[in-house]
Length: 87
Image (cartoon, rainbow, N blue to C red):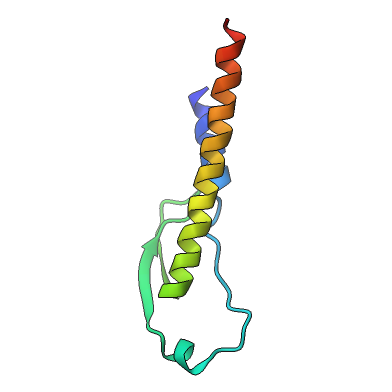
């Protein structure tokens, strides 16, 4: 059971999403400083550097939080079904 849950968590998280700017760069966004972080994608032990602007990191983090919430919701629904079946 724990193995299935671990697999669900790792597959739901997936590869970190890369945020792409579809708008033409404005003078302020061109000058915006890049912030580099080490990221470990799901499915590998090797980290890599990702350099994004503060705005892009905000979008990246919100997407990851959204995925984490979805996994937790699925997990809680699964636990509720199992608990109700034991009564």
